[in-house]
Length: 408
Image (cartoon, rainbow, N blue to C red; front, side, top):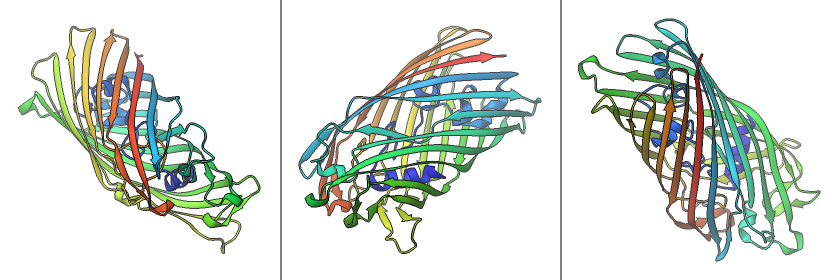
């Protein structure tokens, strides 16, 4: 539940996307998927398919598992009213695990653990004199989802799956109020919680067109009621309704629809193109209220995000029964409203180029991937700062992914 609060408070005071996903979404679920630009919805199954298209796990025999880690570095510069600050150098880690079990010829079960949302960053000093610090100068949002899943092979051509999602979240954000020189200071919003969601997916591999396959997935909207804490070091800032106390709020993380179509020109070569539509317009504003008094002012943070899409293209070529080479490309639209801009890890639309390789035997496998993110600059304003001009520049990120797999 605090995930929304964290996201609520976090997104309310800042716009962010830790791994540089549209909004603040993450898509780095396995090294193979990352290398192919996330285009792994309708081709070869792996345990990590639980995060991309769970219906694929009906194609996995026996008990299989994967364990992986993605390291992320990010850089960006933000200018508020002509004052510029860059992010400090840092490395963020996204762990994941997946395990699948073929219960019968028709039924398979799986459990995945991975991050779907996250962000992090801290601006370089001095932050106390930077007007952008009124929004946020440091943030760390971490989520981890557990997804128990059942998949059913309805026929030789068609499989479906349904999964639950328990999302654990922890969040901490620091801001510095300096718009009133006689009463300036730091305050922190922090908390943790659990929220619930679900997903539905399918894979269709027609016998009449055996070189083609189509997959799709729907993730539900997640409604969260949040409980957290605002710490102002004993101070209060009535101009922005901030003081030290427990707080509560609510937020809706958007639902999304994904689809992918794969084509195999040869037995060794696979191509896939996909699209993800995310309905970020449901993330319109965040309302936060103190729990110590019903008469306390409501903190209202407008976001006015836009619905967006993400296009991905990936390819895999098997050199032999052991080695495979992969590459991918992603065009990721940003949901940010240029009239409601914030400060942390700022980027606009993104282009992502990726490569990778994999090696497997009859019992184990290892996959590696590298991806680079090129982000567009964006200019706009911040209504929260009385429409001061805001500009994002030099946004870029690198991702390094490693995944181990084992067949029991």
